Length: 333
Ligand code: AVJ
Image 1 (tube, rainbow, N blue to C red):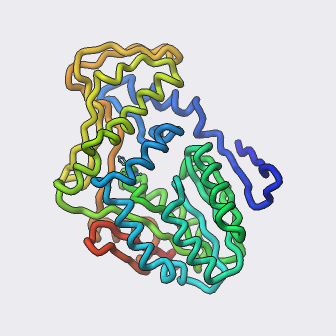
Image 2 (image 1 turned 30 degrees about the vertical axis):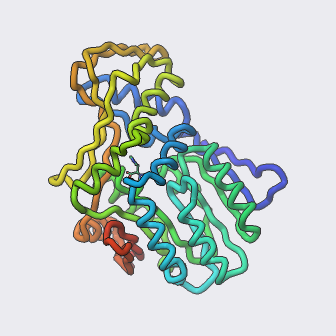
């Protein structure tokens, strides 16, 4: 179900909500993920308000190179990136978060055209709205459609445009998806693209484990708190009784699968109950609850994903260390 509101007097902000990211969804996912073995909770449930704040803190950690690497590409290339078509263009972003990197694209576009529409999709509703309001304050020529939804569901309600659109999927958010899911999502985006539209995907690249692993297990322990927040969220929203101190955050880079695998490891035999789900279960010593994968890509992986989704690589840009890539795709004809 879609609910729409044009908030306050600001005609430049439209908020759309898809009810799929609400509590029942979290409850169902927790039940499905914790009833059998191996146990898991999907990473999209990290991002309630607390989790979104913790993720913002992660992006500033010395170990977490991804955001800075991507930002540095935008600093050098924003004008080129938005130069893919005759102006005006509009922007559509999946997983917009704080929209910090997107500001560089917004500013570049507004140097070349008088007004800009930006549709931002994010799973964290309050976060999305406060980000949208800040953007509107900073850019009087901007109008924003804020869509509170999961990625897949959002595609049906993204506004059409009578100008070329640049779709954005940044920050290596794609890396949380299994390859088949990623390919299906890209194919779904492709199916809503016109021939002059483009898709820009930020992807973290394969590199040595000694660089990757600290990015997912920082010294300050912020990433551990981020990971454990999903258990804290179950305590808050579902009446679970997880003892956070009985779990340790683990992040390992698998060279074979080219991905970080994140899990919370039970530090003892323990029983957990989730009152609102009427669910009780047992965890043995050392048993993992898998919470996240973060895929790292080689150039062949990028090409394979694109081909499978009906997209062609049109351009690519890297940071000076070649740690992170921005890939611009166009739809196959
Ligand atoms: C937001 C999905 C890109 O995988 O690097 C950061 C999430 N998890 N630290 C990533 C995350 C642990 C992040 N993405």
